[in-house]
Image (cartoon, helix red, strand yellow):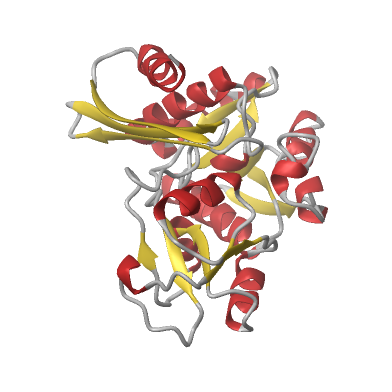
Length: 297
């Protein structure tokens, strides 16, 4: 394929890093393709309340998808965990590159010397705006308070080091992609369950353009990440959720033999957790349905 591709993305440092990563992958496939990255401001970027309090879903992708539909851009790069479970019929997730580490990490204030969960004092103050993380903190750790915190990665780290709180919880993938080097505790994703598709990117396009990008799609798409995130997103669709409920799901393929699966949901102040394995050859929709059944029945 020759010519030019316009990639749409949010304007945060992380979003631009992710878009440039995809652009570099495309140029590895064909160095003759010219790529323009177009920044699109989304409703989520202007949000002044915690995401779970917002009346709409997909606030970090809505305007980017509109730009796709209006043919202002050719492809969009999203953090897949920002995408609503139900997608627009004219659009499709073309490719899912290999997933980064989906784990959450606990990042301490810069003057705190901690190396493990045992070092965290019960009088500590945590900060997060995620209902999932709040639920898991309350069940995993003893702390004095959980504060609400918003903003991009740099903003949250600045608030942390200025003393707003003692610890924040972030996606390890975000820190890794930005090359941020600082002390943190990595949480086991099978215990402290990540958000659906955490650590994965989605390259989205118009269905009518699929054949046009077919060769690039085959080059970019990672089959294990695609299968895992398809299963996780189907569970999200089945529960009809988003950021409005405390829910996490992680599906990990092990050597093309089986899936190791961890999921949880909080209902009526009770946490329901599942941890089990499924045959890798089992239909992915059946795997998702089994996760849903174990959470709800």
